[in-house]
Amino acid sequence: ATEASEHDLIIIGGGVAGYVAAIKAGQEGMKVACIEKRGALGGTCLNVGCIPSKSLLNNSHMYHQILHDTKKRGIDVGDVKLNLKQMMAAKNTSVDGLTKGVEFLFKKNKVEYIKGAGAFSGEHEVTVNLIDGGEQTLRGKNIFVATGSEATPFPGLTIDEKKVVTSTGAIALESVPKKMVVIGGGIIGLEMGSVWSRLGSEVTVVEFLGQIGGPGMDAEISKTTKKILEKQGMKFKLGTKVLKGDSSGDGVKLEVEAAKGGKAETLDADVVLVAIGRRPYTAGLGLENIGLDVDNKGRLIIDEQYRTKLPHIRVIGDCTFGPMLAHKAEEEGVAAVEFVKKGYGHVNYNAIPSVMYTHPEVAWVGQNEAELKEQGVKYKVGSFPFSANSRAKTNLETEGMVKFVADAETDRILGIHIVGPNAGEMIAEGVLAIEYGASSEDVGRTSHAHPTLAEAFKEAAMATYGKAIHY
Ligand code: FAD
Ligand code: NAI
Image 1: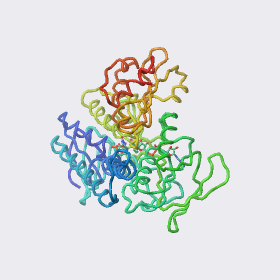
Image 2: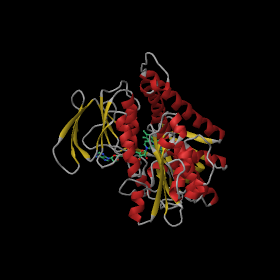
Image 3: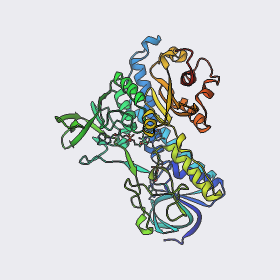
Image 4: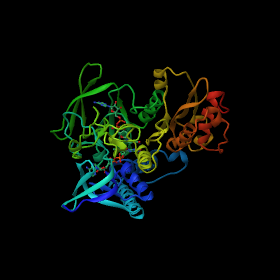
């Protein structure tokens, strides 16, 4: 081991939380090192999450659209073939470009990049098991833990990333499975289920709850989304639990039954995707060496300034509280550095958007009706269907709606929920509105260009305090 060097900040984990914090610290003139064991920066998001999944979602959508949605547009196409190898290569090109881009940004901002697995060897000390061999010990005035999350396993099913896969296997299948069963109808299940369904798989989603979309999705939006996905060919078994699985034969057999109990049924699949949520990843960090605890969900416990009980050690991103989203991790990366450097920082957890990148997309920010009911908040609702929006009509993409939920008395926007074309881009306006404490009337009285999908957003706002013009 070499002599320990002193840093202002050591960051364990080079995912979105860690690399953003590292760049920010570099910009603030701190002597910063970022330790990453994967051999590439960007974490789950860039390597096996957001980026590769969105590449496959985009290109599988184009393939599906060319196959099924051109004739009525006056485009006759000839022989359309899937080249899965090239689709995967396109995905890898996007991933490689972005992870190398982060490495470049590290150099630009004088961040020291240490390739290896870091573990606490003292309260101010991290020892790295280097990828290239050997060990290096670093001393830090401040240390951030940004070690992310991993897929929650399904008891009794062994993940081999070939037949029984997590999202990591699902973004890298070598052929299109004839039958795919997805356990969990949350974001990963619906995004990756969509990809393989569009490429030709018969996809069945088994969801324990009575609705799809995972935590946070508004019930009405979820119902609409389910209908749209069903039309695209996906099958759903809601209120259903998987009892056990067997992958010892050619394919996989899953025994399922109604969540309330009932007759068991066997589902056959070539590939099973386990997508029942993710859990914090802190294995091998040596938390026990410094007495740091995790809660019953495995999350490192912190205060509002991201500090553990050892105040120079902070935690950001998926391995602590809050939604497991890249943009949330990124905000925390910046805020945590600001707390160290300036003593203040800020993340508005009420204004973090969620986007599901299916087609059409689903996006929301703030609270949904069920949450408000539970809190006893009096609210009003305004919605507008894309079928009444001129741009959606010209695009022949009229499924879905925009829905506003505002305080019944003050008209302050409490939540915005969209299923429809470009929902993921459109929600940015909603996030800004909530961030600035806007009322639905503020949005309804703001000019939106014609003809755009965003007019549906404006008209949903108008419907909340008065009436929409076009519906
Ligand atoms: P991670 O990205 O998991 O990074 C942690 C890093 O720490 C990893 O690279 C790991 O190798 C490293 N590490 C762990 N332990 C050590 C150690 N001891 N020493 C050194 N390094 C270590 N979010 C979105 O907002 N939008 C999306 O579209 C989206 N799509 C997703 C799709 C999929 C399939 C998945 C799985 C996730 C998706 N997410 C998405 C979630 C997003 O990827 C995470 O919220 C985000 O990556 C969290 O960032 P993080 O830095 O906290 O953790
Ligand atoms: P999720 O929490 O979104 O959904 C899991 C679903 O599985 C829930 O609907 C749950 O009810 C169901 N479930 C749990 N146990 C089950 C069981 N035993 N049988 C049947 N169903 C069961 O989790 P998911 O989809 O695994 O994604 C993990 C995280 O990754 C998400 O929380 C999200 O934050 C992040 N992510 C974000 C994306 C985005 O922003 N577009 C894309 C992909 C992932």
